[in-house]
Image 1 (cartoon, rainbow, N blue to C red):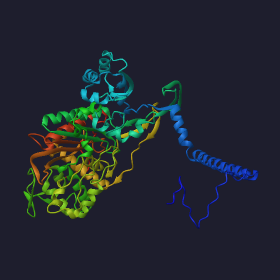
Image 2 (cartoon, one colour):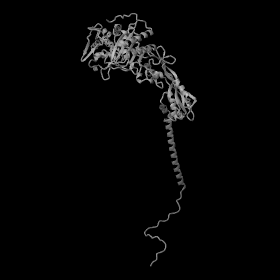
Image 3 (tube, one colour):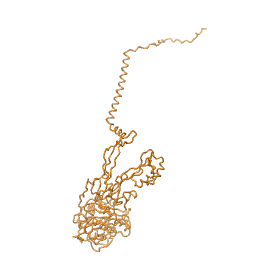
Image 4 (cartoon, rainbow, N blue to C red):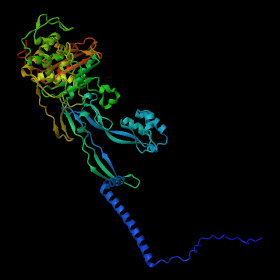
Length: 603
């Protein structure tokens, strides 16, 4: 038996050669190899540095070329603080230089929320004095703020009450200017009012806001390391420019007369509302604009917003019989009727299924154009309108300015409602002849009728006479805009003579002013119902007149809405006209009429 050798032995593989064992010595590195390696590394390093330098240079060029201004402003904002310098709002005067709107100093109250430990208790203490809800005060006190308005431009009594609370460090006061209306409610709808930052919101204050508010200045001051302004570094960047003053065409005394007599007329007639407009028919200057009920422009927030509306220029109504002067003037100027011509005077006029009647029966056979105006005949005016025809009548209505703004320099003027002639269906042509089926603003009606007092020339109404600087130097004069002829002087004079007869012995007898020749026309209009037709028992009484004739200085329109009891214009509105005209003519020193008989009076 063969013995296996002791110990482990690998089997021998035949046919394979053994690899020689690796040598323990590495190949030698020459100096040339080292130089090449160093050179490669230096080149890579230089490439990286060059690329980084290129990127840095590109970034610098980008920042300097496109971002320099922005970054400079950021730096300045960190170092400097700019704040506006207040400007004084321009004042408003009447035509005689009497102040209607001025500025007075007032204190505004602010809080420092960060200094208030108990916001709820603070709100309960100050809210009653500020006439605010405690929850509203607490809502304004956002934690972390250094400043929060509590109320702007408070009364001296309110400021004194807050100081008595001794909330030093929690409550502060700043002096500001606020608008003051020394005459209270006088001319409120015309003057308008301003908001909390003295920006115009209505009336003249809004229409001329850019002129009145001026241009605020700007001051710049440095900041310290924590952002606090350094007063000693303050410098003026742009000086403030105060607002310019306005001189209106309104006369304070005439305005007071108009408001006083209108208020009395509304009370005596039981009317719901009333309006008065007075203009100079030669120039279009508005001497008075009044509406009842009114409001205090210094406390406009205390009344419903609907009372702010300037109704004499913003609300439309059917003018009723006052529109007959336009109908007659159009017929005379178009040659469709003559002064001597007589029209039938039936008890009523049948137009299709509709019947037109006169309120009062003044004639039984025939009547002239003068009689139609004198006695305010609906039947006669309807016949005259039919003579004119749709197109001609429409052209004259538009020529007198109806259906378009008058261009008065006040905001919110309405256009009125004048339908195109193709929409005059049924008896529309006839009813428009006596002021039904057409709507106008009181201003539109007065301006149109004033063209008759101005020899047939229509003028544009305006309320600003001139613009002055704070020292009284004239900056801009507002002259009388050129007028536009609507009818011939002969036609205008003829219609005015008819209106004189209406006051002498017609429906407007209660408008007569002792010592003066007055031309006028009464109006009694029904109020349209929203669903069509007219409201039962609700009327608008009005009177339109000029004084003195033949050279009128005043054109006045009185409108009383929904009077109780008597509702005819000649009964309730004509006396208000007489009271205003009599007092205003005396105040304006207009001499009495030389003759109470007008030459060439129509028969």
